Length: 401
Image (cartoon, rainbow, N blue to C red; front, side, top):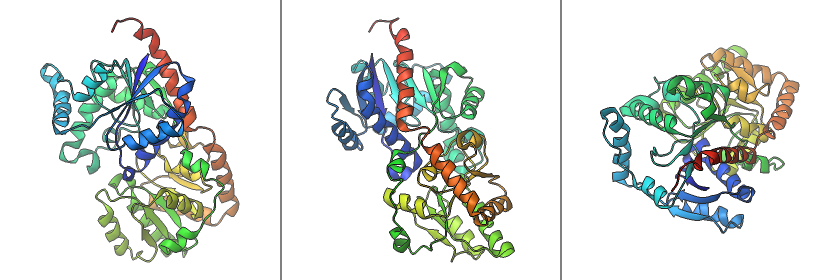
């Protein structure tokens, strides 16, 4: 069977979405010889060098590459196609779909979240979250027509897919509930622990502290500055620790500004915490590793899930985790983290205080985290995708080219 593998371009500044996509694709290239299918890779011209480098690293010679760049007209067509079924009009094929048909693709796998709506080629999609449905009040998923665009896309993309990959039972139930997709068309493959973290477990380096002038004891929160990442409630927790318990602990924020950084900085000044809070912006992967390894704890208080990547990174790198107790968190993290209500600063503060006062608890969480990190890797994820490919073969036999 001829399978298309679509690796759309994602900026490194996207954060977790970039990490997951390339980790999974790397494992796919490494394990290619374990399958009996033929593959053709579709990639944006902005990431073709990364794709070719991985193929060279694993000495893969038998895979063709189709370089695709969505232009202005394709974007208009893609958006227009979302509305056409409402008015019972015919769909206009994008260049991407035409390329898939021209290259005799029998099944398309979109690596990472999102993809293109196809009606002439069966496909496999991936869903990280449905935040526009679970938290529609956040501007990043609703403003400027964002909610409508997301809703129209998922309504057609998910219902048309041969199989949808999601990471948790909660994620599966959300897809079933919001889009009426039968459970047998949904496969649970959890977020894998990032390979780059597993490879750096034994390395130690505190030069990053000198580089950014960070004290030895600090909390770490790597998250883009979206409103749903909930930086402000963490600041309030830090203020509570300072004023009510006389425990002064800095927090280091890492991530690109997506619209709320100035608000978080203003709130930091209002709370008089400017000497305790470090805004590092977007930093390199090497710095991220060092920041995890030297942190007292990761405090990951995002309102949204049901899965999140930073706790897995922290587990692999020996950093204990305090995480938001959101739907899906207990399924993903088990008993490896202290879970808190992300909307209650006092609860966040007390969890930090508990960890500060109990070195034994901290060490227990570190050990549990390291064990948990090894249970599910990118290789395991890709083997699950290969199973989906094989599931489709009996259906493919039923029609001619």
